[in-house]
Image (cartoon, rainbow, N blue to C red; front, side, top):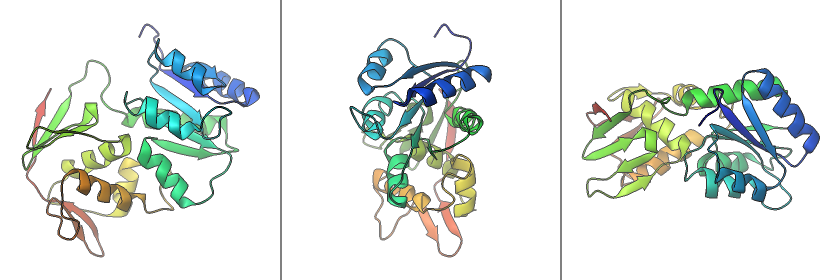
Length: 239
């Protein structure tokens, strides 16, 4: 990319709000482009890869969550969902599990969005030119930069952004009990998961992708009343 500042795409059909967000992002050192339809947004993605996308849940032509799941997840582009309404906790969990890195409920302060964007970008992965870390354990390989696992039989298994962050924390602390609170602090945007059980959901999905027996998991053990422990020995290498 040729621009010197991080590029943020804003997919929001409320043009007044989109304009406010664009001005705020540019004031705080980002380049920003806005789109009011999913089609325009996806066409632009074929030309330029942004560093992060802010996507409204309710769009005139297609649900924002569909756009993220189809377009951004495959390209490992970090995203933040914004929405005027959440019917229940399961909606928030679904948004985070499908692909989104964070969510915000309207109305919110544009300055808060800037803070969330910065936090997500910090967690999104290594910057250009930095060392890529790869973890190997129990015959598995985790390539965090690519959001994927490689199984002992060489199958490639895709991870969501939130699953990648959670696995990264677990393998960085093998044979240690990590509480839910610690995992939330280390993997979530400020306050995003403080009121739901999505850590448990992601643990369950990671176990499934690792081929764990849900009744007797061996790699990610539940320590009842305490949290979770990643048991294998981990070897790190640079890609």
